[in-house]
Image (tube, rainbow, N blue to C red; front, side):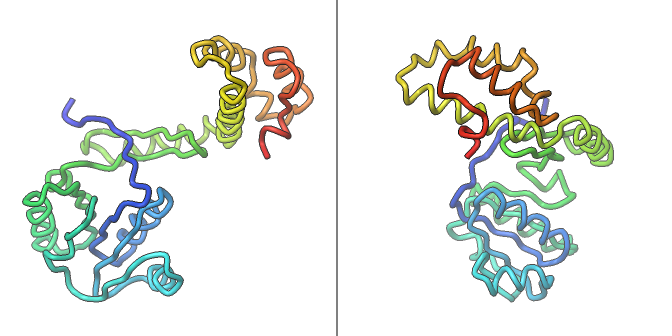
Length: 218
């Protein structure tokens, strides 16, 4: 296995995207969704990027890339159609030990981006190690049909239950059988089918008083 799987926390970290076209725009949106502080360098950008800059969501530098643009950056994405420029971004990043991804050029990256299914806090990453992005896309579409938004609600509920248990001074090691019982009792199906009364009955059975779906989800 060539790549080391990892979920990277980029919350409030400075990230650079070089390229302001449709690919760069997609990269920017993903970074913003993960809480990054994004700078875009490109003489020309999409209308969406211009609006983000106008609203203070990103920093936009409308000029050609310079090596100094990497200063202070945690992560760099090259999203241009200029192979010479992409190679330069990669080379500059390597010299500075920056995390660098060049879109659609796995050999010019020190990390690659998987195809992702996102359902709230549930993130399923699919990678073919750069061998077949088309197959990764197909798998993503298949998984999107299998995993609906009920999984986002389920994880939100689980997080609220865990937080409440910890606040009540429950020993963390005692939580495992509780969560296993909830998971194995069809809770996800109840949430999917909006069976709130059944959900509350299950929560009462496993956890006792003070655990109601509506209260925990607010």
